[in-house]
Amino acid sequence: MADVQYWDDTLTDEVQSIRNLLNTAESNSSMERASALDRAEKKLRAAQGTKRSYKMETRLVADPRTKQMYENKLSTLSDELARCSNDLKALKSGAQRGELFVGAKRGGSGGEYGDMTGEEAGDAMINEMNTIQDKTKSSLHNTKKMVAASKEVGEATMEELLRQREQIRNIDNEAMRIEDNLKRADKLIKTFGKRMATDKFIQCFAIINILLLVGVAIYSILKKGGANGVPAQNSPTSPVRMLRGLLFENDEYQH
Image (tube, rainbow, N blue to C red):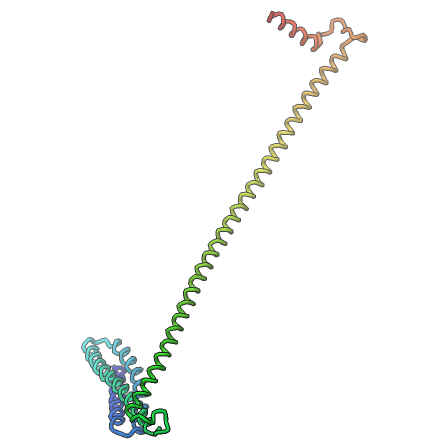
């Protein structure tokens, strides 16, 4: 409560001080007017900061009636502060115009506006100032165009960077996919190699078994055969003869 009352008193005093300075500037000579306007401008900036603090403290008031009272006071002081600001601008503009008139009169016949009256010289100076202001606006407009163009280039560059980033991401994903495929192919090759090795081992084992059987058969024939190639008496029939007999019987059966 004490804080908000402090800001209320401070802002009230500042607004009153600004109004007094403006009244002084309006009624005094040019030099005193300039000093009063300068002080009023400084106090106006300080009052704007005080108003913000006053507004912040008003929001913290808990009692609704008290809060409404200070909000009304703040609104009144804000309106008065706005009027002071407008009056200050008007007085400064009038002071500047008066200085232009004085300068034109002091120029005499040898100056740039020597053949003009003070009012005409002041109007001419104002026109020149307006021309300079127009040039400044044109330059500012061109600068804004350059900034807008730079912004467009920046946006296009950003879009291109995002597109390239997406391409790099796709390339990374493709590289990872290829790497996975290579790993799978390597596993398949190893598995296929193992199967091939196993199949070759089985084939070799089968060939060895066949060779052993043939060797046993040949050994039996050679052992039980006679010296002249006639088989011994009471010896069992050789596998070759048995095979021939089976083939012969098969031919007769077919005929």
